[in-house]
Image 1 (tube, one colour):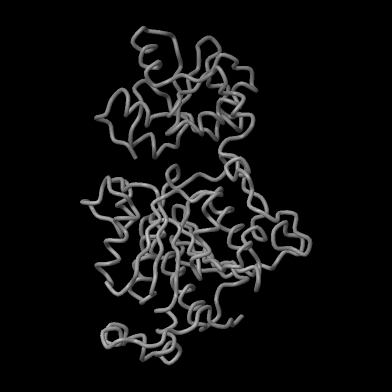
Image 2 (image 1 turned 90 degrees about the horizontal axis):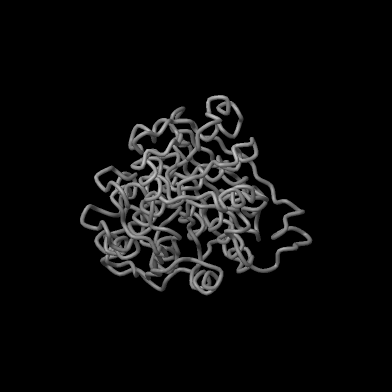
Amino acid sequence: MSLPPLVEPAAELTVDEIRRYSRHLIIPDVGVEGQKRLKNARVLCVGAGGLGSPALMYLAAAGVGTLGIIDFDTVDESNLQRQIIHGVSDVGRSKAESAAASIREINPLVNVEIHNTALDRDNVREIFAQYDLIVDGTDNFATRYMVNDAAVLLGKPYVWGSIYRFDGQASVFWAEHGPCYRCLYPEPPPPGMVPSCAEGGVLGVLCASIGSIQVNEAIKLLAGIGEPLVGSLMVYDALEMSYRKIKVRKDPDCVLCGENPTVTDLLEDYEDFCGAVSVEAQEAVVDSTITALELKEWQDAGKDIFLVDVREPAEYEIVRIPGATLIPKGDIISGEALSRLPQDRQIVLHCKSGVRSAEALAALKAAGFRDAVHVQGGVLSWIKQIDPSLPAY
């Protein structure tokens, strides 16, 4: 559907702006007025990571007058494979500050506002209220639901994107004109069902593919041109090089934007709503958790343990704790691997950070392996506390 422009045009374009944006100005659908609207726009990008990097760079290049960046993280070496707004010299630096510096290099005419903080229930309304449009570059379900809820409650449109391995999705959620994120995904997936990019990986260039779609949609909304992805989900498969456009209808029973909403304010705890780990896993780890230091002490003392790495084979190839046997979490959850586990040795589980091993531990406890434990912090803690020479990922 065609929608009216989201913002009013600025009073004028300077000579420098006319020179810089000339390739926009000669497009009939954009023209001088469309560029004036971009100049007058205020856009917030939630996250300066994989999706935020190309989004911020192209929003800046396009001439969006004010760009807000909210990100509390710092640049890590593992980010550089896909987060192209940052460079080697930025490692250890605030992502928001690093992104702002890159934006100023791309287009010094853009005003950059930095929010070097975590987005949470206490500040999301105040921050969102300052902007015309939100571009969502988050990578976890808790923040996605909070972004959606705040946008709906404030009447703000936002452009959403999601990436995983070779697959990407993008849409525009604007409750006044179509569905919201909860219409598409009423409930978050069960804990552990959908791996994060840190667990499952992502093809770096996929960020550019989806991030550029998000910018394209943002420009259309701001300038009032074309047909935005309101009520549509764009699904991209990089391996098949295919795009599918799926119709998404507004759910009249949506708890947030439906005819009789039951969610009329932000939730008290979005982490709890999305469940980082299941209740079973939370219960299983009580009194059944050891540290990486304790694991090393057990190994040095010759304790008879059976150390199980529940990550995926590709992760096992990158780095491993000495003596660990690879049995992916899925094989434990399904019960397929239970016959391979010894009954006469204490089983110690570990993963990358401790979340997947907690879920696997719950399955083992339910299967009768009462003495099983897991390693808090997983292989990352082992690297940090025991062997810093090993590569983190």
